[in-house]
Structures are given as C-alpha cells and as structure tokens.
Amino acid sequence: MTITESRAESGPTTITVTPHSPTIGAEIGGIDLGAELSDGTISEIRQALLDWKVLFFRDQDITTDRHLAFARRFGDLEIHPFGDPHPDHPEVLRITHGENAPGLENGWHSDVTWRVEPSLGSVLRMLDGPEVGGDTLFADMYEAYEGLPDDVKEKVEGRTARHDFTRFKIGMRKRGATEEQIATVEEKFPNPHHPVIRTHPETGRKGIYVNSAFAVEIDGMDPDESEELLQILYRQANYPEYQVRLRWRANTIAFWDNRSVQHYAVSDYYPQTRVVERVTIIGDAPYYAADQAPTDLPPRPFKGQIELDRRGVDWRRRR
Image 1 (tube, rainbow, N blue to C red):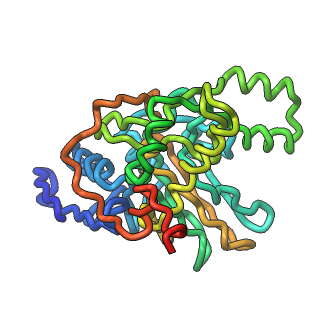
Image 2: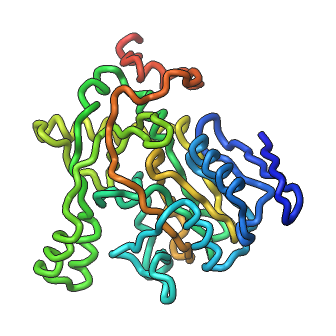
C-alpha cells in the first residue's frame, strides 16, 4: 500500500505503509519525522494507526523537540507522575535499564489505564539498546476480543473493572515513601472503573481493555469468578497470531494506540543497557457501546487451534 501526497512547498512525497502481520503492525517509510509535516501527512499517519494499531518508523535521527512536536500533532501530552522525567521536558519519560536497573515491563499492559482518562497513544524513541534482545511485542486487542468464546463475551460485555497503580506504590515504598505520602497520591489518582470490553472511539470496534499490570477485579462479581475471567482475558494476548514483534535499532520510533493494543517489553538483555524516551498522548474516558461496532469487518484469517478455542472446542477430549 502506497500513499502519495503533493505539498506545494516541497513537491510530491510518498509514504509507504508496509504491514508486518495480517492485522497488526506496519512500517511507515518515505517520511522524515524531523521535518514539518503537513496536515495531510498527519491525517494519513493517523489513519494508518487506526488501521494497523502500531506503526514503526526507522532511521529517524530526530531531536527531543521534534519527538514532542510530532506527538503533539495527535493531542495534548501527559506528564507521568511516577517516572524519571527529562530534565528539560517534563512530558518526556526516560526509561533506562541496565546492570543496576533490570527491565520490569515484561508483562502485557496498556499504558496508564489507572488514569480516569487513559492515554490515546504512546510514541517511543530508541536511544541506546543491546545489539540483540530488548524487543517489544504488541498484541491486537480487537482480535483478542473476537477470539473469545461467546459464553465468555456474554459474561464480560457491559461490565467494568477497577484499575490501580499498585506496582508504582510498591516502588514508592521501596524508595522510602510513607503511607501518608502514598495516600496523597491515591487521592490525586483515584481508582478508575473502566469497561472490560472497550469501544474504540474512532473505529467503533470492541477490544479487551483489562491488563495484568493494572486491572484488579471485575466490579460486582464474585472474586473467584472475577479472577478466572480476568485470567482468560489476559491469556488472549499470548496467541502469536494476534502479535507483532519489533526488533529495535538506533533511531527507531514506535507509535502505538493504547486503546486497541497491549504491549510487552522483552527483558532478555541484562546486564546490557537499554534507554528509550516515551511521550504519551492524553486520551479520553473509555466507554462501551454494544451497537457501535462496524458490521463490514473482513473475515478473521486465523484457523487451527485458535479457531477451536474460539468455538469452545476442547480437542483434548476428542482424542
């Protein structure tokens, strides 16, 4: 797929969109994120993001200012309250791992779902990384939802779940924060209750919106049943058919839609160093609308065991 756009100030340019899997992940070529991009180009990138959920940009040797400028074309930016901010730009979250700080993000999650209005998307730039290792996987939560057995869908659609920043509280305690200080932060970021199945505000598609990092319990449900259903929903991200894997290299940028994907940062490079900078675009309050999903979706390309699981067929009992 090739998108061509004409710009009077610099002549025609060509943006290429190269899918990396049938439903998720595409590499965007023919673009310099360090340049001033036209509204038309931004519109095409936004559409590619909606179509492919995560976009990869290679060989983007840009400044922090241009990183911020690109992200701002898609919305206002948040300041992460628990991270290591950039000394000059509070909207930039610098994440550094190495011998004294092993990677901790190797679990499926969507960024900041503990906010009342979680993020629209994240734009992450690789500054320094291992020669091999430190990949990031992304999982398509639309297809993860579509792959659920009907009886599971019936149990979770329309329900909400409580989210909490528990792991950040653990880090605060390790750094010596008092319970009074933690309580003050909890008042600032009260636990939100988001739909278990979220309707995407731009595409209308349904996707799983609980994750093992921040979702605590399904509201109004027996704790054991809640935990059983949450584990089923979490496992949906584990199917390779729903995933795309990014092997980073210097000056690679990934832009993903936190409303439709979860991601997993592989921690297999200790004690080597990995340094990235993330800029996060503020989103809106998640909601669920049963009748908003589009009806003209292409057929699912997934067969074999993944289809048997969707139909609730236990092949082990049929041997």
